[in-house]
Structure formats: C-alpha cells, structure tokens
Image 1 (cartoon, each protein chain N blue to C red):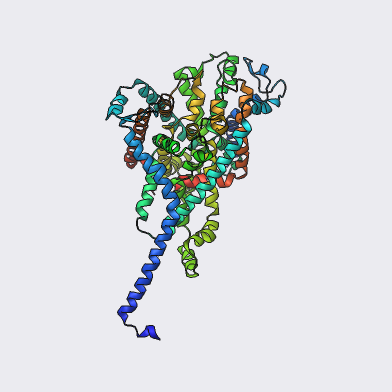
Image 2: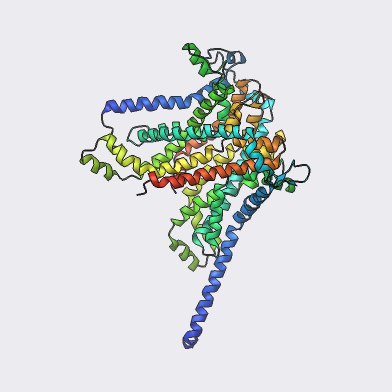
Length: 277
Length: 310
C-alpha cells in the first residue's frame, strides 16, 4: 500500500482500468445532464434514450431566461455569495487573530462558546432567525440573505489553528515598532495567512453558492430567489420541459466547477486541513 | 540619572503599572477585534438558541401571539406517526450512506495513494460531485431515475430486466437516494483519507516488509489501525451531516407536489413554514439535535474500543 507497492505494469494497467471506469461512472450524470440539456423535446420521450441528441438545440439555454427571471436570480446568487464570503473571511480572521495572538480575560471561555456553536444544527435556529428577520423587516432583502450567514465559528476555528502556527516573534517585533494590534493583523498576519484564507474562502464560497434552507426561508419573491431555491421550486411549475430544467441546473453548477478546477490544489488542501485539525 | 535614584519599590511599581496599561490596551484591542464575530454570534446563535428553546413550550402560528402549552409539543412528539416515519427515513438513509461511503472512499484513497500517473486527474473526477449544488444533483439524478424515459431504466429495459419505479416507491427510493448521496459524498471522505494516509510514516511499511509481512498484513496491521482516528472523524461528521439531509432528497423525492420520502429536516420545514405550527416544528428540531448529540456521544464513548492514537 505504499507508493512503491505497485510495481508490475500489468497491475498498474489494471488499476488504471478500474480508476478510469469508476471515474467515467462518476462523470456520467454530468455528461447525461449536458446531453439532455441540448435535446429537442421529442428526444426526451424515448423509452431507450440515447446519449447523442438527434439535433443540438442550444435554444434550450436561452429559453431558461425567458421562462423565469433567471438573470436576476443568477446575479443575486453571485452578489450574495461574494458578500457572504468576504464577510466570513474578514470577521472570522479578525476574531481568529485575537483568539490566537492576544491575551484577554474570558478568551478561552468565549472560544469554547464558539466551538459549542458548531455542534448545533441550523434547523434549531432557523425559526428564531426568521423572527429576527421579520422584526428587522429583512424578509426578501439582500441583508436578510447575507448577514445571518457571515458569522462562521468554523472559520474562526480553522484560521485560529493556522495563526497559532505563526511564530509569536512576528507579533512581538511589530509591537516594539509601535504598531497596534489591528495594523499587525492587517499588515503581517493576513498576508502570511494567504493560503489558509484562500482555503477557507473557497469553502465559504462553495457553501454559500449551494446553500438552500436559509435562502428558502428568508425569501418569497421570485426576484429575490437564489439559484438553489429557484431550481428546486420552479420544477414542474415553470420548467415543464426537462431539457430546459437541466440547462438551468448546468448553468447553476458548471461555472463554479470550472472555477474550482483551476484552484483544485488550494481547495483540496483546505478540505484536508479542515478534516485533520 | 533620576530613575536610577528611585527606590527599588517605586521602580517596580512603575514597571508593573506600565505592564498593566499594556495588558489593558491589548485586552481592549482584542475585544474590539472579536466584537463583530461575537455580536453576530450572540444575536444569531445565543439569543436564537434561547428563543428557540422557549418556543418549544408554546403553540404558535406566527400570526397570533404564542400560547404557552408546557410540555404539549414534547408529548405530541412521542405520538406523532409522521415524525416517526421521517425519523425512520432519515436513519435508513444516513446509516448505509456513512457505512458505504467510508468503504468506497478508503478504497479510492488507497488506489490514489500510489505513484500512479494522472493521480490529480482521477482525484478531481471523484471530487467533482462534492462541489456540485445539492439541488442540481437532485434535479439531474431525478431525471436519470425517471421510470419511463431515464437512462437507468432504459439500460435495465434493454437488458431485459425489470424497470423499477425508483423514486415513487419508498423502498427503492431509499436505495436510489443512498446511491446519489454516496456519489456526491465519497470524494470528500477520499480527500480526508488521503491526507490521513500521508501521515503514516513510510518506515513502518519498510520495516514490516523486511520482516516478511505480506501486502494484506501490512494493510491490516499498519494502515487500518493508524487510519482509525481519520475513520472516526469521518464517521462522526458523516452521521451529523446525513441526519440533516434535506435539499437533495427534497428535490428528488417530491413527485406531484407530495414528498415520497420525507426526512426529519423536511418535516421541520413542512410543519413550520407550510402548516404554520412553529412551536412544534422547533420541538422536532430539538429532537434532532438531541439525536445528533446522542449519536456523537455514543461514538466518542465507543472510540476507546477501536480508535488508536499514535
């Protein structure tokens, strides 16, 4: 099982054959989804469906935009995801810096409180949060979609772990130079933590893009929906043609998948980091 | 110099004062830096949690004010057949999901922990579903499982096999949903297993090989025990997350406006935001929290029997 273990070429070929066929099986739903999204309606009702469309109907993709306010929903998702990600990274890294580098009364207790928060599932909190939104009149607003989800205990935990690995001398030296803790955080610790910030940022982005339960709860107006909720709710209602529905689903997922392909390394490291620490 | 003439006592007091001042300013800065996080946490977590607990003792339709009913919601919980069904569905999905995920993920991680070519390409293939929006996954697979026109039944039909109804029969729906959850989650576990495998020192394997241990013995006596902390971590969070399945299953099993396979979180949403029985919905959520805690504690209790920490 070590890296040296597989020597004979035959075994190696066998391993490739297995990995490639499992990989193909993993890709099949994506491939089928792309193929379906390009089919004309008549192709959808075949008892033995074929992978290759009888003709390529690219119009399915533009039809998505005419049946629902898809462009608006798309823009909502992008905006909400960016705002939540920046908010989470900033707020969590500030707190993580203080928890890892500064001494103050109540530090361990407050940190423990945040950790305890990780164990409580969101469903317990969703109704009170919904009440707070109604009190603030934030139902169907961007602040309602964004603000309750920018406080990440998980982020504080992950980034604190990373900051703890930075030698304390950096902090002491900057303090002697007369820098205040915020300057030290901003000028020294943030740049040093770039890999960890990237890893956490990717996770935050992914989570936010795919998030469903809160967006479903805090919006009602079609113009305030995000992609996840839109695709779930418009099925059978506005999207009666499966080719158009899958065109919408593809547009909701592929840009993100492609973006992540480029940042594969950081993402995988981030996930591994979140699992081991 | 003046300072040199100061008595030792005064000198110490001055230094002490300076240090106090510094410590106080550091604390102030710290509170300032954690303030955004702690304020948000207080409002959206602590206050929400307290309010949530209070609401479990009320009956509330969101239009009129909540009515105190004591333990009414809790006693109803034990009589509620729909809750029991949702609980059963959730367990029937969660347990096989976690079990098979661990096995498949370990197999993939072992295959990729070799010096085989295209490792990162394969890793990406298995990892792509983890990145995909659960709602989109549900949408795509629902079409794959379509009893009349989907490719799965198309294949089964052309092989002369029976064509199941898949998602509209609870029994086949559970199998179908577990397959999709496995497909979408195995990549995550695989990445964590790969990270775990990389922490096992090579020397262990070399020493064992020198002693004449076979590949299987090395796997059984080195890899498996040293991976138990990783396996433990994955089974704990696997259970926690699978008990909360919602969006993916919701999209797949909602057929003609009725949910064929309601899970606990679906039931919470349905009771609260469709039937406007908020107090009861929150009580179900607390029951879910209690079940998650019991499972987690149980796993921590049992870990002493099988988890080896180096």
